[in-house]
Length: 473
Image (cartoon, rainbow, N blue to C red; front, side):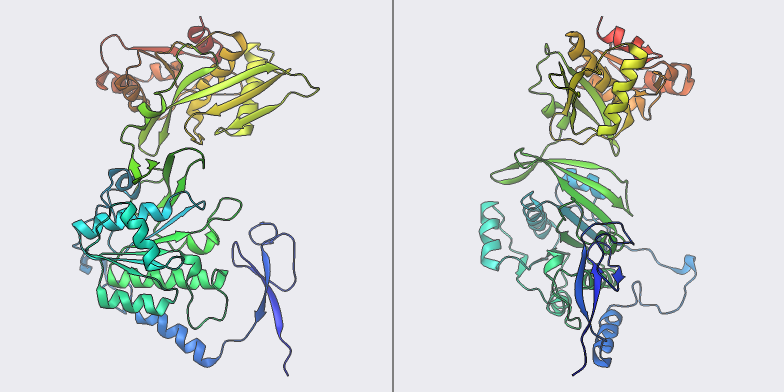
Protein backbone atom coordinates (compact mmCIF):
# COMPACT_ATOMS: atom_id res chain seq x y z
CA UNK A 1 0.00 0.00 0.00
CA UNK A 2 1.41 3.39 -1.03
CA UNK A 3 2.26 5.80 1.74
CA UNK A 4 -0.05 8.81 1.94
CA UNK A 5 1.94 12.02 1.78
CA UNK A 6 0.70 15.16 3.44
CA UNK A 7 1.26 18.87 3.00
CA UNK A 8 0.27 21.97 4.95
CA UNK A 9 -1.93 24.55 3.24
CA UNK A 10 -2.51 28.06 4.59
CA UNK A 11 -6.25 28.70 4.92
CA UNK A 12 -5.63 32.43 4.57
CA UNK A 13 -3.61 32.72 1.35
CA UNK A 14 -3.45 29.16 -0.02
CA UNK A 15 0.33 28.82 0.32
CA UNK A 16 1.67 25.26 0.58
CA UNK A 17 4.46 24.15 2.93
CA UNK A 18 6.19 20.81 3.48
CA UNK A 19 5.99 21.06 7.27
CA UNK A 20 3.88 22.78 9.85
CA UNK A 21 4.82 26.32 10.86
CA UNK A 22 3.24 28.61 13.36
CA UNK A 23 3.46 31.54 10.95
CA UNK A 24 2.75 31.29 7.23
CA UNK A 25 5.88 32.55 5.40
CA UNK A 26 3.78 33.77 2.45
CA UNK A 27 1.16 36.00 4.09
CA UNK A 28 2.40 36.23 7.69
CA UNK A 29 -0.80 34.86 9.27
CA UNK A 30 -0.48 32.81 12.45
CA UNK A 31 -1.90 29.31 13.03
CA UNK A 32 -3.48 29.06 9.58
CA UNK A 33 -1.60 26.02 8.23
CA UNK A 34 -3.72 22.86 8.10
CA UNK A 35 -2.61 19.37 7.16
CA UNK A 36 -4.17 17.90 4.02
CA UNK A 37 -3.51 14.70 2.12
CA UNK A 38 -1.37 15.26 -0.95
CA UNK A 39 -3.04 13.24 -3.68
CA UNK A 40 -1.96 13.42 -7.28
CA UNK A 41 -5.01 14.21 -9.42
CA UNK A 42 -6.05 11.45 -11.74
CA UNK A 43 -6.27 12.01 -15.45
CA UNK A 44 -10.06 11.90 -15.23
CA UNK A 45 -10.16 14.55 -12.51
CA UNK A 46 -7.81 16.77 -14.51
CA UNK A 47 -10.02 16.48 -17.56
CA UNK A 48 -13.10 17.29 -15.47
CA UNK A 49 -11.50 20.45 -14.15
CA UNK A 50 -10.41 21.53 -17.62
CA UNK A 51 -13.86 20.83 -19.01
CA UNK A 52 -15.52 22.72 -16.14
CA UNK A 53 -13.42 25.81 -16.85
CA UNK A 54 -13.79 25.61 -20.64
CA UNK A 55 -17.54 25.10 -20.45
CA UNK A 56 -18.04 28.79 -19.71
CA UNK A 57 -15.12 30.07 -21.73
CA UNK A 58 -14.40 32.31 -23.48
CA UNK A 59 -15.32 35.07 -21.12
CA UNK A 60 -16.61 37.65 -23.56
CA UNK A 61 -18.45 37.60 -26.85
CA UNK A 62 -17.43 34.06 -27.84
CA UNK A 63 -13.97 34.79 -29.21
CA UNK A 64 -10.88 32.62 -28.90
CA UNK A 65 -8.55 34.98 -30.77
CA UNK A 66 -7.37 38.50 -29.96
CA UNK A 67 -9.72 41.25 -31.14
CA UNK A 68 -8.74 44.83 -31.88
CA UNK A 69 -10.35 47.28 -29.47
CA UNK A 70 -12.55 49.26 -31.94
CA UNK A 71 -14.17 46.03 -33.17
CA UNK A 72 -15.39 45.01 -29.70
CA UNK A 73 -19.06 45.78 -29.22
CA UNK A 74 -19.86 47.22 -25.78
CA UNK A 75 -22.48 45.61 -23.59
CA UNK A 76 -25.91 46.96 -24.35
CA UNK A 77 -27.33 46.04 -20.95
CA UNK A 78 -27.57 48.98 -18.54
CA UNK A 79 -26.71 48.79 -14.86
CA UNK A 80 -29.28 47.05 -12.70
CA UNK A 81 -30.64 48.91 -9.69
CA UNK A 82 -30.88 46.73 -6.58
CA UNK A 83 -33.83 48.76 -5.31
CA UNK A 84 -31.89 50.47 -2.52
CA UNK A 85 -30.14 53.80 -3.34
CA UNK A 86 -27.73 53.33 -0.42
CA UNK A 87 -26.48 50.04 -1.90
CA UNK A 88 -26.53 51.39 -5.46
CA UNK A 89 -24.16 54.16 -4.33
CA UNK A 90 -21.68 51.63 -2.92
CA UNK A 91 -21.87 49.54 -6.11
CA UNK A 92 -21.33 52.58 -8.32
CA UNK A 93 -24.89 53.33 -9.58
CA UNK A 94 -26.02 49.70 -9.63
CA UNK A 95 -25.02 46.22 -10.72
CA UNK A 96 -22.94 45.70 -13.85
CA UNK A 97 -24.09 42.65 -15.87
CA UNK A 98 -21.63 39.79 -15.46
CA UNK A 99 -19.98 41.22 -12.36
CA UNK A 100 -19.03 39.19 -9.28
CA UNK A 101 -19.61 40.91 -5.93
CA UNK A 102 -18.26 39.48 -2.69
CA UNK A 103 -20.00 40.48 0.56
CA UNK A 104 -18.31 39.70 3.86
CA UNK A 105 -19.22 40.32 7.47
CA UNK A 106 -19.48 38.80 10.90
CA UNK A 107 -22.08 36.11 11.61
CA UNK A 108 -25.49 37.61 12.34
CA UNK A 109 -24.62 41.05 10.96
CA UNK A 110 -27.37 40.84 8.29
CA UNK A 111 -25.71 39.67 5.06
CA UNK A 112 -28.36 37.08 4.18
CA UNK A 113 -31.17 39.42 5.17
CA UNK A 114 -29.88 42.24 2.98
CA UNK A 115 -29.35 40.03 -0.07
CA UNK A 116 -32.74 38.37 0.34
CA UNK A 117 -34.32 41.83 0.27
CA UNK A 118 -32.24 42.71 -2.81
CA UNK A 119 -33.29 39.49 -4.53
CA UNK A 120 -36.95 40.25 -3.83
CA UNK A 121 -36.65 43.78 -5.24
CA UNK A 122 -34.85 42.67 -8.42
CA UNK A 123 -37.25 39.75 -8.93
CA UNK A 124 -40.15 42.18 -8.80
CA UNK A 125 -38.65 44.90 -10.99
CA UNK A 126 -36.21 43.18 -13.40
CA UNK A 127 -36.63 39.43 -13.79
CA UNK A 128 -36.17 36.00 -12.20
CA UNK A 129 -33.59 35.68 -9.42
CA UNK A 130 -31.92 32.46 -8.25
CA UNK A 131 -31.09 32.38 -4.53
CA UNK A 132 -28.79 29.45 -3.65
CA UNK A 133 -28.59 28.55 0.04
CA UNK A 134 -26.02 26.05 1.20
CA UNK A 135 -26.72 26.59 4.89
CA UNK A 136 -30.53 26.64 5.07
CA UNK A 137 -33.37 24.66 3.55
CA UNK A 138 -35.81 26.33 1.17
CA UNK A 139 -38.46 26.21 3.91
CA UNK A 140 -36.21 28.14 6.28
CA UNK A 141 -35.44 30.76 3.64
CA UNK A 142 -39.18 31.10 2.94
CA UNK A 143 -39.84 31.75 6.64
CA UNK A 144 -37.34 34.60 6.55
CA UNK A 145 -38.84 35.93 3.31
CA UNK A 146 -42.32 35.97 4.86
CA UNK A 147 -41.00 37.91 7.86
CA UNK A 148 -39.49 40.44 5.44
CA UNK A 149 -42.78 40.56 3.49
CA UNK A 150 -41.16 39.43 0.24
CA UNK A 151 -43.72 38.07 -2.21
CA UNK A 152 -41.16 36.57 -4.59
CA UNK A 153 -43.28 35.45 -7.55
CA UNK A 154 -40.09 35.30 -9.65
CA UNK A 155 -37.70 34.46 -6.82
CA UNK A 156 -36.39 30.90 -7.12
CA UNK A 157 -34.79 29.13 -4.15
CA UNK A 158 -32.26 26.31 -4.43
CA UNK A 159 -30.76 24.46 -1.46
CA UNK A 160 -27.64 22.86 -2.89
CA UNK A 161 -23.91 22.85 -2.31
CA UNK A 162 -22.90 21.18 -5.60
CA UNK A 163 -21.50 23.63 -8.11
CA UNK A 164 -22.57 21.51 -11.08
CA UNK A 165 -26.20 21.64 -9.92
CA UNK A 166 -26.04 25.41 -9.53
CA UNK A 167 -24.51 25.84 -12.98
CA UNK A 168 -27.20 23.68 -14.57
CA UNK A 169 -29.93 25.69 -12.82
CA UNK A 170 -28.45 28.97 -14.09
CA UNK A 171 -28.35 27.70 -17.69
CA UNK A 172 -31.93 26.44 -17.44
CA UNK A 173 -33.44 29.43 -15.61
CA UNK A 174 -31.33 32.25 -17.11
CA UNK A 175 -31.85 34.52 -14.07
CA UNK A 176 -31.19 38.24 -13.90
CA UNK A 177 -29.25 37.73 -10.64
CA UNK A 178 -27.56 34.83 -8.83
CA UNK A 179 -26.95 34.88 -5.07
CA UNK A 180 -24.73 32.27 -3.40
CA UNK A 181 -25.03 31.92 0.39
CA UNK A 182 -22.29 31.07 1.17
CA UNK A 183 -19.14 30.30 -0.84
CA UNK A 184 -17.66 28.25 2.02
CA UNK A 185 -20.40 25.61 1.62
CA UNK A 186 -19.93 24.92 -2.11
CA UNK A 187 -18.01 21.95 -3.47
CA UNK A 188 -16.60 21.22 -6.91
CA UNK A 189 -17.12 17.55 -7.82
CA UNK A 190 -13.62 17.03 -9.25
CA UNK A 191 -11.91 18.09 -5.99
CA UNK A 192 -11.57 15.82 -2.96
CA UNK A 193 -11.00 18.60 -0.43
CA UNK A 194 -13.65 19.38 2.18
CA UNK A 195 -16.08 22.31 1.71
CA UNK A 196 -14.61 25.55 2.99
CA UNK A 197 -11.02 24.58 2.28
CA UNK A 198 -8.89 27.03 0.38
CA UNK A 199 -8.82 24.83 -2.74
CA UNK A 200 -12.61 24.45 -2.84
CA UNK A 201 -13.22 28.15 -2.16
CA UNK A 202 -10.77 29.21 -4.86
CA UNK A 203 -12.07 26.74 -7.43
CA UNK A 204 -15.75 27.48 -6.83
CA UNK A 205 -15.21 31.24 -6.95
CA UNK A 206 -13.24 30.93 -10.18
CA UNK A 207 -15.96 28.88 -11.85
CA UNK A 208 -18.66 31.27 -10.67
CA UNK A 209 -16.63 34.10 -12.16
CA UNK A 210 -16.44 32.23 -15.47
CA UNK A 211 -20.18 31.61 -15.33
CA UNK A 212 -20.94 35.28 -14.65
CA UNK A 213 -18.73 36.59 -17.46
CA UNK A 214 -20.04 34.14 -20.05
CA UNK A 215 -23.75 34.51 -19.24
CA UNK A 216 -23.63 38.22 -18.19
CA UNK A 217 -25.48 37.31 -14.98
CA UNK A 218 -24.35 39.33 -11.94
CA UNK A 219 -23.42 37.14 -8.98
CA UNK A 220 -23.48 38.00 -5.28
CA UNK A 221 -21.23 35.78 -3.14
CA UNK A 222 -21.46 35.75 0.64
CA UNK A 223 -18.16 35.00 2.38
CA UNK A 224 -17.61 34.23 6.03
CA UNK A 225 -15.02 36.16 8.00
CA UNK A 226 -12.14 34.87 10.06
CA UNK A 227 -11.50 35.73 13.70
CA UNK A 228 -9.30 38.59 12.49
CA UNK A 229 -12.30 40.11 10.71
CA UNK A 230 -11.29 39.35 7.10
CA UNK A 231 -13.02 37.17 4.54
CA UNK A 232 -11.75 33.59 4.78
CA UNK A 233 -9.17 33.15 2.04
CA UNK A 234 -9.11 36.85 1.04
CA UNK A 235 -6.25 36.51 -1.44
CA UNK A 236 -8.19 33.82 -3.26
CA UNK A 237 -11.53 35.62 -3.26
CA UNK A 238 -10.87 39.36 -3.40
CA UNK A 239 -8.58 39.11 -6.41
CA UNK A 240 -11.24 37.29 -8.40
CA UNK A 241 -14.25 39.39 -7.43
CA UNK A 242 -15.05 42.61 -9.26
CA UNK A 243 -16.28 44.29 -6.09
CA UNK A 244 -15.74 43.53 -2.41
CA UNK A 245 -18.19 44.86 0.17
CA UNK A 246 -18.09 44.55 3.95
CA UNK A 247 -21.15 44.80 6.15
CA UNK A 248 -19.98 46.32 9.42
CA UNK A 249 -21.60 47.27 12.69
CA UNK A 250 -21.67 46.63 16.40
CA UNK A 251 -23.63 43.58 17.51
CA UNK A 252 -25.57 45.62 20.07
CA UNK A 253 -26.22 48.57 17.73
CA UNK A 254 -28.94 48.62 15.11
CA UNK A 255 -26.96 50.54 12.47
CA UNK A 256 -25.06 48.69 9.74
CA UNK A 257 -22.46 50.14 7.36
CA UNK A 258 -22.04 48.63 3.90
CA UNK A 259 -18.50 49.63 2.94
CA UNK A 260 -16.90 49.08 -0.46
CA UNK A 261 -13.19 48.25 -0.33
CA UNK A 262 -12.79 47.26 -3.99
CA UNK A 263 -14.85 48.16 -7.04
CA UNK A 264 -13.77 47.85 -10.65
CA UNK A 265 -16.82 49.76 -11.83
CA UNK A 266 -17.08 52.58 -9.31
CA UNK A 267 -15.50 54.50 -6.47
CA UNK A 268 -13.96 52.61 -3.56
CA UNK A 269 -14.60 53.25 0.13
CA UNK A 270 -18.19 54.30 -0.48
CA UNK A 271 -20.49 53.70 2.49
CA UNK A 272 -24.18 52.87 2.65
CA UNK A 273 -25.97 53.14 5.99
CA UNK A 274 -28.75 50.76 7.03
CA UNK A 275 -30.68 50.13 10.21
CA UNK A 276 -31.62 46.60 11.29
CA UNK A 277 -35.30 46.53 12.21
CA UNK A 278 -37.95 43.86 12.58
CA UNK A 279 -38.93 44.13 8.92
CA UNK A 280 -35.32 43.82 7.77
CA UNK A 281 -32.63 46.27 6.70
CA UNK A 282 -33.98 49.80 6.31
CA UNK A 283 -32.05 52.55 4.53
CA UNK A 284 -30.83 55.61 6.42
CA UNK A 285 -30.96 58.37 3.84
CA UNK A 286 -29.49 61.09 6.10
CA UNK A 287 -27.09 59.32 8.48
CA UNK A 288 -25.47 62.54 9.74
CA UNK A 289 -28.75 63.78 11.17
CA UNK A 290 -29.47 60.40 12.73
CA UNK A 291 -26.08 60.11 14.43
CA UNK A 292 -26.31 63.65 15.83
CA UNK A 293 -29.91 63.35 17.06
CA UNK A 294 -29.08 62.31 20.64
CA UNK A 295 -26.18 64.68 21.13
CA UNK A 296 -25.92 66.67 24.38
CA UNK A 297 -24.97 70.12 23.14
CA UNK A 298 -23.73 71.35 26.55
CA UNK A 299 -21.52 68.35 27.39
CA UNK A 300 -17.76 68.77 27.55
CA UNK A 301 -15.45 66.44 25.64
CA UNK A 302 -17.61 66.42 22.51
CA UNK A 303 -16.86 67.71 19.00
CA UNK A 304 -18.34 67.31 15.52
CA UNK A 305 -16.07 66.21 12.68
CA UNK A 306 -16.72 65.74 8.96
CA UNK A 307 -15.33 62.52 7.49
CA UNK A 308 -15.40 61.72 3.78
CA UNK A 309 -16.65 58.18 3.23
CA UNK A 310 -16.09 57.71 -0.48
CA UNK A 311 -17.87 60.65 -2.13
CA UNK A 312 -20.21 61.32 0.80
CA UNK A 313 -19.41 63.67 3.71
CA UNK A 314 -20.63 62.37 7.07
CA UNK A 315 -20.90 64.42 10.24
CA UNK A 316 -20.04 62.32 13.27
CA UNK A 317 -19.74 63.13 16.96
CA UNK A 318 -16.39 62.37 18.61
CA UNK A 319 -16.28 62.10 22.39
CA UNK A 320 -13.32 62.17 24.76
CA UNK A 321 -12.95 61.74 28.51
CA UNK A 322 -9.79 62.82 30.33
CA UNK A 323 -9.43 61.84 33.98
CA UNK A 324 -6.44 61.83 36.36
CA UNK A 325 -4.77 58.45 36.46
CA UNK A 326 -5.04 56.59 39.76
CA UNK A 327 -2.39 54.09 38.79
CA UNK A 328 1.26 54.31 37.84
CA UNK A 329 0.85 54.39 34.08
CA UNK A 330 -1.79 56.41 32.29
CA UNK A 331 -4.13 54.51 29.99
CA UNK A 332 -5.28 55.39 26.49
CA UNK A 333 -8.39 53.60 25.17
CA UNK A 334 -10.02 54.18 21.79
CA UNK A 335 -13.14 53.01 20.02
CA UNK A 336 -13.45 53.85 16.34
CA UNK A 337 -10.17 55.83 16.20
CA UNK A 338 -6.73 54.50 15.38
CA UNK A 339 -4.84 54.03 18.66
CA UNK A 340 -1.48 55.17 17.31
CA UNK A 341 -3.06 58.27 15.80
CA UNK A 342 -4.53 59.19 19.17
CA UNK A 343 -1.15 58.76 20.88
CA UNK A 344 0.36 61.15 18.34
CA UNK A 345 -2.34 63.75 19.02
CA UNK A 346 -1.74 63.45 22.77
CA UNK A 347 1.97 64.06 22.22
CA UNK A 348 1.25 67.15 20.10
CA UNK A 349 -1.18 68.49 22.72
CA UNK A 350 1.45 68.04 25.41
CA UNK A 351 4.41 69.46 23.49
CA UNK A 352 2.86 72.17 21.30
CA UNK A 353 -0.24 73.27 23.23
CA UNK A 354 0.91 72.72 26.82
CA UNK A 355 -1.84 70.37 28.01
CA UNK A 356 -0.45 68.04 30.69
CA UNK A 357 -2.42 64.99 29.55
CA UNK A 358 0.50 62.62 30.08
CA UNK A 359 -0.60 61.85 33.65
CA UNK A 360 -4.26 61.37 32.69
CA UNK A 361 -6.29 58.47 31.39
CA UNK A 362 -7.74 59.32 27.98
CA UNK A 363 -10.78 57.61 26.46
CA UNK A 364 -11.89 58.45 22.91
CA UNK A 365 -15.05 57.21 21.26
CA UNK A 366 -16.86 57.63 17.92
CA UNK A 367 -20.65 57.64 18.19
CA UNK A 368 -22.61 55.28 15.95
CA UNK A 369 -20.10 52.46 15.59
CA UNK A 370 -18.01 54.20 12.93
CA UNK A 371 -14.33 53.48 12.36
CA UNK A 372 -12.79 56.79 11.31
CA UNK A 373 -9.41 56.66 9.60
CA UNK A 374 -9.29 59.95 7.71
CA UNK A 375 -6.69 62.50 8.95
CA UNK A 376 -9.22 65.35 8.70
CA UNK A 377 -10.74 64.31 12.03
CA UNK A 378 -7.52 65.17 13.92
CA UNK A 379 -8.66 68.67 14.85
CA UNK A 380 -12.01 67.45 16.17
CA UNK A 381 -10.44 64.68 18.25
CA UNK A 382 -7.87 67.08 19.72
CA UNK A 383 -10.63 69.61 20.50
CA UNK A 384 -12.70 66.95 22.28
CA UNK A 385 -9.69 65.98 24.43
CA UNK A 386 -8.91 69.61 25.26
CA UNK A 387 -12.58 70.25 26.03
CA UNK A 388 -12.69 67.43 28.55
CA UNK A 389 -9.34 68.45 30.09
CA UNK A 390 -10.26 72.14 30.47
CA UNK A 391 -13.95 71.49 31.27
CA UNK A 392 -15.04 73.86 28.51
CA UNK A 393 -17.48 72.73 25.88
CA UNK A 394 -17.11 73.23 22.13
CA UNK A 395 -20.03 75.35 20.81
CA UNK A 396 -22.87 73.14 19.64
CA UNK A 397 -23.10 74.95 16.28
CA UNK A 398 -19.40 74.47 15.41
CA UNK A 399 -17.72 71.88 13.17
CA UNK A 400 -13.97 71.24 13.14
CA UNK A 401 -12.05 70.12 10.03
CA UNK A 402 -8.29 69.75 9.71
CA UNK A 403 -5.27 67.48 9.87
CA UNK A 404 -2.75 68.03 12.68
CA UNK A 405 0.98 67.80 12.00
CA UNK A 406 3.74 66.97 14.48
CA UNK A 407 4.73 70.63 14.65
CA UNK A 408 1.22 71.53 15.78
CA UNK A 409 0.28 73.06 12.42
CA UNK A 410 -3.05 72.51 10.69
CA UNK A 411 -2.86 71.03 7.20
CA UNK A 412 -5.40 71.34 4.41
CA UNK A 413 -7.83 68.53 3.59
CA UNK A 414 -9.48 67.48 0.35
CA UNK A 415 -13.04 68.34 -0.74
CA UNK A 416 -13.36 71.12 1.79
CA UNK A 417 -16.29 72.82 0.05
CA UNK A 418 -18.33 69.62 0.09
CA UNK A 419 -17.67 69.15 3.81
CA UNK A 420 -18.59 72.72 4.71
CA UNK A 421 -21.75 72.59 2.58
CA UNK A 422 -22.91 69.44 4.38
CA UNK A 423 -22.32 71.07 7.77
CA UNK A 424 -24.30 74.16 6.75
CA UNK A 425 -27.14 72.00 5.42
CA UNK A 426 -27.53 70.34 8.83
CA UNK A 427 -27.88 73.66 10.62
CA UNK A 428 -24.35 74.37 11.88
CA UNK A 429 -23.30 78.03 11.93
CA UNK A 430 -19.50 77.94 12.26
CA UNK A 431 -16.65 75.86 10.95
CA UNK A 432 -12.94 75.92 11.80
CA UNK A 433 -10.65 75.01 8.89
CA UNK A 434 -6.87 75.27 8.30
CA UNK A 435 -5.79 78.77 7.26
CA UNK A 436 -3.66 77.32 4.48
CA UNK A 437 -6.80 76.85 2.41
CA UNK A 438 -7.53 80.56 2.64
CA UNK A 439 -4.42 81.29 0.56
CA UNK A 440 -5.65 79.18 -2.33
CA UNK A 441 -7.86 81.12 -4.73
CA UNK A 442 -9.34 77.90 -6.09
CA UNK A 443 -10.50 76.61 -2.70
CA UNK A 444 -11.80 80.04 -1.73
CA UNK A 445 -13.79 80.16 -4.95
CA UNK A 446 -15.22 76.73 -4.20
CA UNK A 447 -16.34 77.92 -0.77
CA UNK A 448 -17.99 80.96 -2.33
CA UNK A 449 -19.75 78.80 -4.91
CA UNK A 450 -20.89 76.29 -2.28
CA UNK A 451 -24.04 78.29 -1.69
CA UNK A 452 -23.55 78.67 2.06
CA UNK A 453 -26.45 80.27 3.91
CA UNK A 454 -26.16 83.77 5.23
CA UNK A 455 -24.52 84.05 8.64
CA UNK A 456 -22.42 80.91 8.22
CA UNK A 457 -18.85 81.61 9.34
CA UNK A 458 -15.74 79.85 8.06
CA UNK A 459 -13.03 80.46 10.68
CA UNK A 460 -9.39 79.78 9.86
CA UNK A 461 -6.49 78.78 12.09
CA UNK A 462 -2.86 78.15 11.27
CA UNK A 463 -2.06 75.94 14.26
CA UNK A 464 -3.75 73.58 16.69
CA UNK A 465 -3.21 76.01 19.57
CA UNK A 466 -5.01 78.82 17.71
CA UNK A 467 -7.87 76.53 16.72
CA UNK A 468 -8.37 75.39 20.30
CA UNK A 469 -8.42 78.99 21.54
CA UNK A 470 -11.17 79.76 19.04
CA UNK A 471 -13.19 76.66 19.88
CA UNK A 472 -12.78 76.89 23.69
CA UNK A 473 -12.77 80.63 24.22
